[in-house]
Image (cartoon, rainbow, N blue to C red; front, top):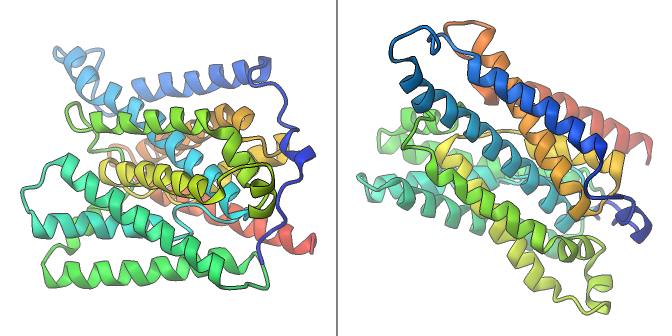
Length: 329
């Protein structure tokens, strides 16, 4: 059994798409991004080649923070609507682990594969893994919504174990660890441009946001209002797979981001995806930027991976959400 689907009243509670609060949020996140541009060991303002290094490293890294943070937060929001469960997102359903398995498979079969080829393999595997999870939810009756993310984490652990075994057999375990580090250190000009694909995914989600919101009311209601429920599920799965696969290849694993952001926004604004999407993207960018700034400064000149900080924060929020759900029965 999943959590109760959002009522139509709750789904409409989002309010206006743009308001002064969103403008304040944009200014705050803009300040964080400006701070990201000026934070680092290398003196981009005093060195002779500072402007060149600024364009090669700082600007791509900041753009990657925006795109990756927005993409993973948005993926979590769509996945929670489609599954009618507050505790699912790409890292609690095994989608990220499937993307990593696809990336590893491409690298083994085609060692000299381009970034686009590796990305295609990751996206395909992420799509298959997400569909497996959705099919499992359809065929198995669960007594508690809390079991759903646990099942997803278990499936992800199995896929991760398979990936680790294959990596050990092919001497690629170190590469696998680097791919899942979830760090923006290696984001440079010429290596991150394909990340702009997730911007197109965000536009697509915004265009079909109303359909996703209706699908979040359940299959019976969706069918009664004339919505092709299975087609919407397939479309949502494809968009989630593309966003997760692209971010996994370029950046790595960003755990729990899709869990934290949609729940916070939903508690404050309801479940209308169209009006919530700007807030979800904005908050996702802000959280990733703050974690990245902490990782770059806490042990400077070295860096702590963003995934480590996100994992600590996200695990704490996950536990709080579980306790909150338990208190509500």
